[in-house]
Image (tube, rainbow, N blue to C red):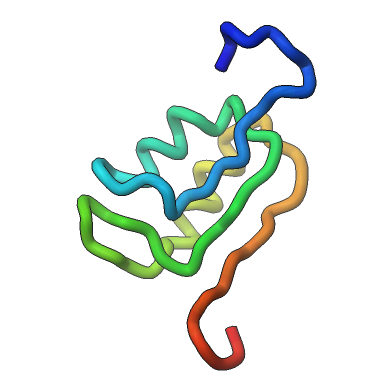
Length: 80
């Protein structure tokens, strides 16, 4: 990310895209590049779909310098 050296280049951090490792550890590694988010209802936790741990995610975000919006993606039927 840093090699691009462009102020208009950044990461839309979609937490549902991390599927090989602990998604919260991966988010922690990449949050410094985030310019926006896509917070999903579920995460792939070591290959298994699980509901997102909003408290854990909130702690990661609060420990960062990110200031902006947190878009939420809901895909299940019914009222999210």
